[in-house]
Length: 320
Ligand code: UDP
Ligand code: MG
Image (tube, rainbow, N blue to C red; front, side, top):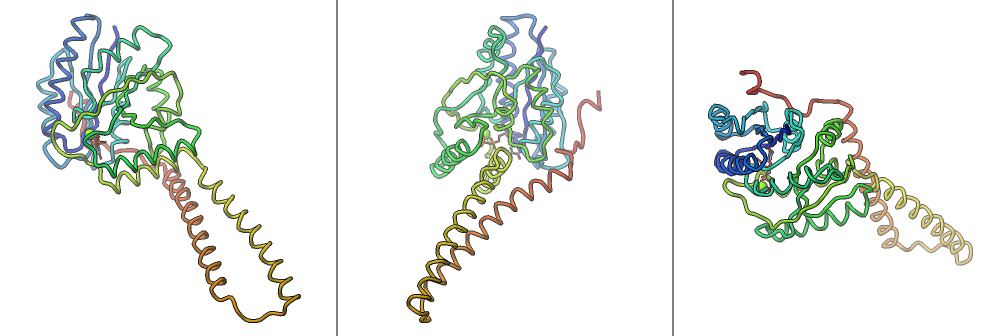
C-alpha cells in the first residue's frame, strides 16, 4: 500500500493554502479512485509566517479527511524555503514524497502523471518538473536567472537544470539520500542533483501565483545564487589562484623590462599613470580574490557551528 507524502513549505500563504489544499484533495480523490491502494498525507511547514497561515493550517488539520490527513509544523521564525523543504522531508513517512509550493505554481494536476511514471518505470527514482518559459516574471530577473545557470554549469560538476522547480516526486531511497545531507547552507537544486539517481524531467508552462506575493526579493535571490555557487563548486577559488599566477608571471616580465630599460637608457622619473594603473588593477584583483576566499570562509564558519537547520515552535504531531 504505497503512501504518498506531499510536503509544502509555507511563508505567508494564508490565501493560497486553502486553494492549494482544495486542488490537491481533488487530485488525491482521482488518484485514489484509479488505485484504491494509494494513500496520502499532507505535510505543511509554517516557515515563520506573519499572517494567519498557522491558523489556516490548524483548521486544515482539524478538518482533515481520511483521504488526506494533514500534519503541520511551525518554525520559531523564518528559516527560509530550504529549511522548510528539509523539515517537510524529515516529517514525511511516505514511500513516495513530493515537495510543492503552496501558491499553485506547482500544479497538483501533474501528480497523477508523475506517480504513474515512478510506479510503472522502476529505472527512475525521481520525476522532476521544469518550466519551459518564465512568463509573468520580470525580464531582468529572467536574465539574471539564465546567467546564473550558465555560469554555475560551467563551473560545477553537479548539473543544474535551467527552469527546474523544486516540485518533484521521489522514491523513499532518494529522500533518505537527500536527508543524509545535513549541510547548513542548503541549495536544494544542487542537492537533488548531487545525490544522483535517475531523474525523469517533465516540462510545463509557467503558472502564475494563485494569490499572495512572492517572498523572494532580488537580493534574496542573489544571495541564494551565491549559496549555490559556493556550495557546489570551488572553481572560483581555482580561478583566484590562476589569476594570481597570471599576474605574478606578468610582474616578473615587467620587472625584467624595467631593469633592462634602466640599465640601457638610464632611469628618468616618469610613468606615474602606468604605476597608478598597475597599483589599482592589482589592488582590485587582490580585494576580489580576498572576497572570494571570504565567501568560502564564511560558509565554512557557518557550517562548523553545526547549528540546527530550523527550530520548531509547535507541531501537530505533539498534540495528537
Ligand atoms: N517559502 C518559504 N519560506 C520562505 C520563502 C518562501 O517557505 O522564506 C515558500 C512559499 O510559501 C512557497 C514556496 O516557498 O510555498 C515558493 O515561494 P515563492 O512562491 O515566494 O517563490 P517563487 O515561486 O517566486 O520562486
Ligand atoms: Mg511561487
